[in-house]
Length: 334
Image (cartoon, rainbow, N blue to C red; front, side, top):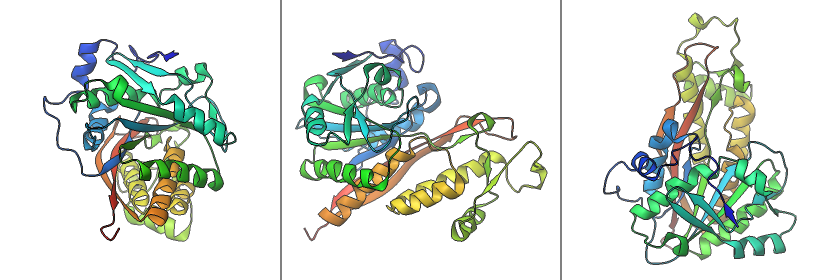
């Protein structure tokens, strides 16, 4: 059973040549980042964020001498569920560039061995969700550029949707995915997440005047200011778009700490509307497990940051996009 490219022609081009051109910056890809097996990538329309997504995909240290497996974790935008994750029940996904195979054997294993944690997605929910689909075409193009000739046979993906969960769920999920990454060096992970959604239509107008202001709020555990139509912007030190960038870059620094508790503290104090925050929390638990149980040194790096618009007033909105990567380095002592 095939998942159709339901967002082709709207969120990204359905024409093969146009799409390839949009996702190709040069004939030769930049060098990969050694041991980079995890990336963070936005999921908006390609015309908004493809140039931000690409550096993360170029970082992936893809091996072409062996079949590979790729977990793709993204948030749910249309349904709410808690303390479980949903796996695609399709056999393959279609893109305008070609098809990607889903690891149905692993999906069956997980849903059988951990029935309380893993459930299959309803096909209509799967096809409606964009956070996973927006990774498919850019992944396919990257694999093709890296020289994998039979992508459908040599690559298997596992699309996973996350809504909400508690620490026990994340801990168990982190162990299961972490074991896969540790046991199989040909396994990769993609976290699909946009960053700040700012503006009244997103019900978020958080503002900080400087990084020091944000640090003070974190230290004192006090929520940051929310701008309103009555806020006197002339009294604020920096434009709103600069404040948004401070909020987002501070979030990246918090993620660098590999501490789920600090991540949740940051989200509570800022309210930053990072739509993939649960997928990112899952990644932090994966890293925590790899570090503590397998002595893996997990090193973050951030590739590119952008915003859909430079907000100057409360009546305007924007979405932020950031791409990053994580290197999984085995400590030399092992």
